[in-house]
Structures are given as structure tokens and as C-alpha cells.
Length: 131
Image (cartoon, rainbow, N blue to C red; front, top):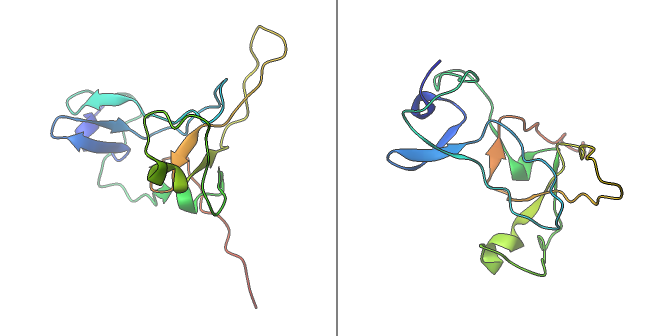
């Protein structure tokens, strides 16, 4: 087990804190909820540690096959904690299907991410052959 600040999936926010970007966001029960990756301290660690020097092709949301967006981004009713400019470059991560719950009739909504976000579960979108 290694430290978060030595892990390939950790993105530093401040000198001793950052975000674990190991997993893609799961669907939510409310529309256009922003995905927030868990904050950890650099000295923490977990069993899913991958050394930062490991060769890995990190995929940003804007390049990912699981990311859907329109030319104008997302126009939410409530912008929550993000400015309009962020939403203009936002889309939905559809990596995971909704999981069943115990109550009948739930709605599922995919979480909003920015085109510069990313996680270790991203897969490059296939290129379109224009020949």
C-alpha cells in the first residue's frame, strides 16, 4: 500500500490534500448533481494504490466514450456551486448504470462533470474515420 500523494489516481488540490480520481461517478437521484471526487490527505493510502510512475493513459471526460455533452454544455435549473462558464463545458458521465434500491419508482440522473475532469475508468472515444 502506498500513499495518496504517490498514487497515479490522486490529483493534488493543495500541498497536503487532493482528490482520489480512481472511480467514475455513480448516478444520483437528482438531476445535474455535480460529481465531487473524495478529498484525501497525501499521507493516506488504500489498497487500490498504483504508483505514480506506472504507464497509464489517463482519459479526460471530454475525450471519454462514457461522457455525453452538447455544444452548449448543460443548462441546469440550479447551478449549485459552479459558475455558468463551468456548466458551458459540462456533460454527464454515463459510465455506470443506476443500481437498484429498495423503494419503487426511483429516477436516476447521471452526474455532471467538466470536460477537463477525468478518472481511471475512462475509455477514449473511438475516432470517426472521415475517409
